[in-house]
Image 1 (spheres, rainbow, N blue to C red):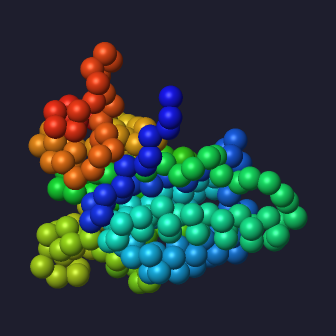
Image 2: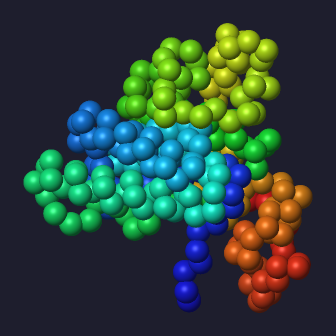
Length: 236
């Protein structure tokens, strides 16, 4: 069966995961990490992609982004991936692939999952046992959102402004969201939706999203052919 194209729709937030092949490290030192951030900034601006949140782990990374032009996200990821691997291989005297196939991604419902996805991204190093608190991990957008540093890579989503009337109020409210964390069901839904490529949101969101793309947004039920005029509106 032919592989479905990635689900990408302009002006919707997308959760992106890029992993190393066979779980190998994609960052060996801070120079690698700085290179990745520089490439993301360069190509996000060139293609028209807003980067709302990110975390660089040892063998994978997460992004929360909104593409503003058609094909902006795949073009950005292609340019970043190719340039990064070429430079990484030259620096470390290696050859061959680095990535575990193509990047994984999906759309998420803004009102229900955008802030949750940001918290999920911030807590990745904690869940992995790398640090005890998100702020201890320097290679994420967490510090930007709690007012500890300014990250030029970040374009905050407009939903951030609903957290408070002043920068201090928004920073405090976001810090509290991260402190509260996510339950297992939320974390599982965010992981599986990105890895599977199926949209994550409530029934109405999914149904409306299906009207904007020919690509199926949810996994079809066995024995029922997909029809764009009669999409399955159940959520992940």
